[in-house]
Amino acid sequence: MNVTTAKAISVLGAVAAAAVAGNALADGNGHAYGHYRDRDDGFVYARVVDVDPMVRYVTVDRPREQCWDETVRGPAPPFGIAGQTAAGGIIGATIGHILGHGNSRDAFTVAGAAAGAAIAHENAVRNGATIETRERTVQRCETVYDHVTEKRVDGYRVTYVYDGRRYTTLTDYAPGDRIQVAVDVRPVAHRVRY
Image 1 (spheres, helix red, strand yellow):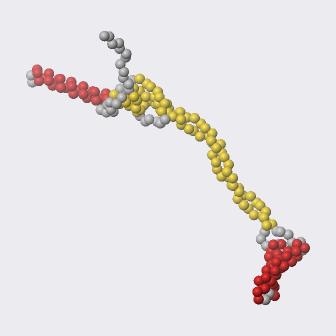
Image 2 (cartoon, rainbow, N blue to C red):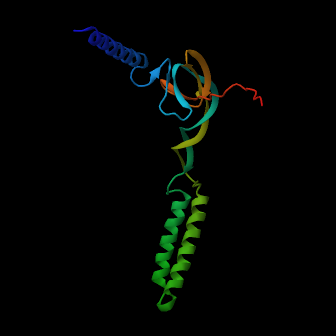
């Protein structure tokens, strides 16, 4: 192998080593020195190193239905005054129906029912019958409010690294392992002389 060939192989080896080292530093995806460049539109991605949720606690009223059983007294089904009055009305209607003839039969039936009910009611009251009651269980419900403390996340304090420097910003969401940042490069004001 001559000297020229050896020099060419050395130069090619150095170029290959530089390319491999460059990709190793940038990890092959353009991720170098803590930032990522996807497009040349003024935005880059910086590496997120810390995400701290900003938490506050609030007290809220949470509604719920509360039920219980309650014992109440109410009228019992017949046979108290109401039962005797109904029985008297039925007996009176039957008698009126038997006594009526032709077109007047309906009128006698109604009159007999009214008279029988009135007589039976008076008789029941005179003999000391009362309206009977009994106890029964009913369920009652109402809406009550429990005071509950809830944790609310108002945002996130995000620390990221760009070009070896640490920055902190506030976001509405947890960005993951990278965050998009705007890069604005402007020249320092220079005086133009004519």
